[in-house]
Amino acid sequence: MLDTMRMNRIRPKPTGESRPLLLAGHPALDFLNTRMRVNRELVDFLQCDEDVLRWLNQAGLLVAKSRRSTAPMSLVDAARTLRANIRSLVEKRKAGQRGDPSVLNGFLVGAQSYPQLLWNKPRTLTIERLRRQDTPAGILAPIAEAAADLLATGDFNLVKRCEDETCVLWFSDQTKSHHRRWCSTMLCGNRHKVAAYRKRRRAEGV
Ligand SMILES: [Zn+2]
Image (cartoon, rainbow, N blue to C red):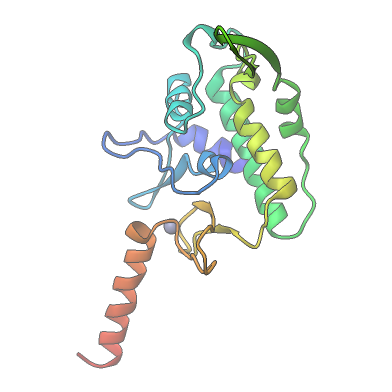
């Protein structure tokens, strides 16, 4: 929480070309990764309500325009609060410790959905589950539910933080060998390959 408060104060602006990455293999972890290092600086991609809506859209958790929040707590504040709690719970769970899920549970209270009968063609009826998305908790419900599911049922041997010491990105290792070490081979993986190569060259006195 302290970390988040500090971030709120600093609020470095994401640069035009940088955007949040969807590489974690799980929506709740991708949501954590909306805060990442860009050129060594911690950058928060969630700066305003529009950023949150854009990210939900990019992550395929689309929010209908007519159902946006009218509640007093802004969507971005709610998103950051939820993200901080999910981060803490994921870190605790990974460390084999007990966390406090009360904030996440509070969001889950606002995660309301209901079935609706849809008559598509004369002989085709389906029941679809629709979400109430008129509050920040309702809009963020897909994330809260995904996080709860990950925490309760996920294999945390495969939920990993990138091995780069300065990297803050999390991912779910879905490779066959389960040896994924980096958030991305293009980012940290490549950097470490180059660093290891230089070290080897130095050791060889080249
Ligand atoms: Zn990384």
